[in-house]
Amino acid sequence: MKNPQPKPAGANQVARILREALENGLAVEIDGLGTFLPGHEQGFRFVAQTKPRVFIAYVEEDLDSVERLYDVFEQRGLRPWLDKKKLMPGQNWPRAIETAIETSDFFVACFSGRSTTKRGSFHSELRYALTCAARIPLDEIFLVPLRLEDCLVPNRISKQLQYIDLFPDWETGVNKVLAVMDNEQKGRRRKRLPLAG
Image 1 (tube, helix red, strand yellow):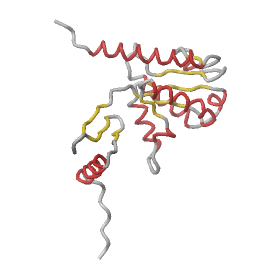
Image 2 (image 1 turned 30 degrees about the vertical axis):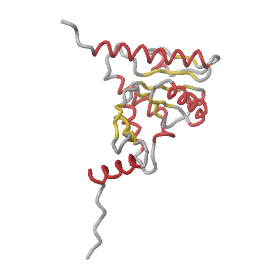
Image 3 (image 1 turned 180 degrees about the vertical axis):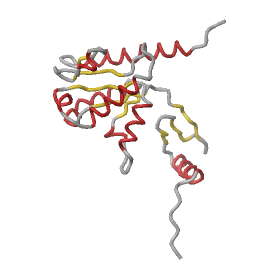
Image 4 (image 1 turned 90 degrees about the vertical axis):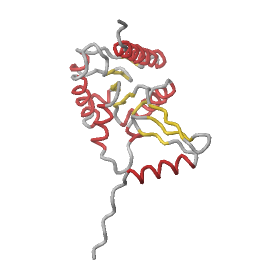
């Protein structure tokens, strides 16, 4: 008799794991949906995720600057998505990245002298973001180009979109990015409000 193949985790197994984590005082985040938090007396509460999600595209050589940007976004109440922090071992990373781009409120492309000349995933992510942006209303902001240093931004981007410089004054540049995202989110909320009638 052959050994039976292990079955994938079912709903009961997932519920058991969730319950055990909560009983041990651990929070459990379901990416994109929200977080289950342990309750005071054997219960739990669910906090829905409403913070804007920001995908950060970059090249490996710019990781230090990008991690700094990630930290600022997180501190300011955004949900930044960075492959180094979000991808798990064994995960189908090309599909996970596409899903993260598709479900993001903003796509931040970090340009530098290295990113504009290096072949690789940065340009693939940028192309995919442009495809996603084509499905978004023209008056909404999705792709936010940033320059980490003095460099050329590809014509396809610079002819259509204004970029923000994070140099020579990092703080001023980051505040511009945050203001753009905040204003865009407020505008999107206004569009969704029902008209009084």
